[in-house]
Length: 463
Image 1 (cartoon, one colour):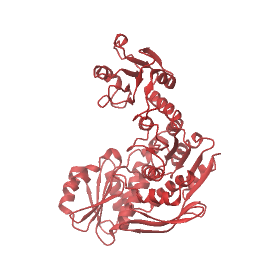
Image 2 (cartoon, one colour):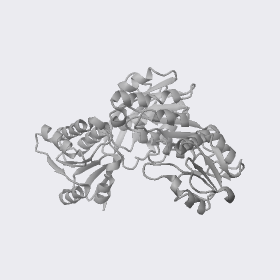
Image 3 (cartoon, helix red, strand yellow):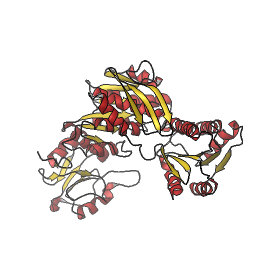
Image 4 (cartoon, one colour):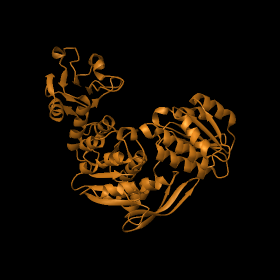
């Protein structure tokens, strides 16, 4: 069979995958891909009308048909009769579920294996590192950006080509049952849990709720598959007692089979000795933050399970480039800027502050912090803790923006013994003040949850 960019779909396969009803159209019609975006869909793709939080794809159905698209999946009566126009129209109960069902069908009809990665922190970096390792030998598909939910993960799997041998996928969640559904779609051969921390508490209630939600992955790993666990995380270790799958532990602890020794962090990156069950090999990463070693060990574990050589694992790890907005460090006119704007929760914020404190040495350290979202009733106390940590970390100036800016400032004020300078304001005000007050040699950390748009401050500083 010819290798096309995407594997084609016949109408009969679409019906088999979705269990939908064919309202009209040719059962033998072939589509060369699937799209949910009316702005970028090509004429030979199938359109799925997804009901999102902001837009309902059904309202764009007539537009995509007018643009030349010959098929669509709907859950509503879209109000237009396409019977006489040769249009394939499939009706399902839930178009988001249908998208996932198509992706799962696609995964099962291809000769690939799947790594699924979840955790409170480090998912994206671990995914990228793992893909870098696996791709040293195999053609590998990996999630793009934050394609880790019930829309993004299926879209990734729908990009599969016949030549792919592995897919490395990230599984995110903010409510119970979501990881279970994502696991059902992607059917992992290997499941990785990086850690369990204080993220998405609003939708999960407690740290135990987070743990149980992450644990949903385990029953979705193939019976002959392997679960990869962080041996340094007590909650992950607890989950490891709940699976019947083969288990591999990574970490710094004695119990880990894949571990790191002689970890050394400098201003240029991190070096360590990677300890595999049969050998040891030196690794040099061009990244910052001790937690990056844990991400690298998770990726190395996957490489070990699939039979890669130590040299292939080393090549994959050392060729990894930091994900945009994840501890990216650059200089502007002598000022060192740490861009960690991709997202934030209490654990990742704490880790980033420790990196700032370590890298700045005796220079002036400045934290620009936006809200950490989805913490529910824990939000006030968690933001106060971050303020207190900032004060204890010898940070000279603290900029805070968002609904919980006062809580961060209060936490810092109660802890501070060195009269830390605190500025509360909108992003634009913070940027204006930064531009006036920054001096060569300063270290500036910018971080906040995705929706806070903290990257706008990075862009402003660059300009």
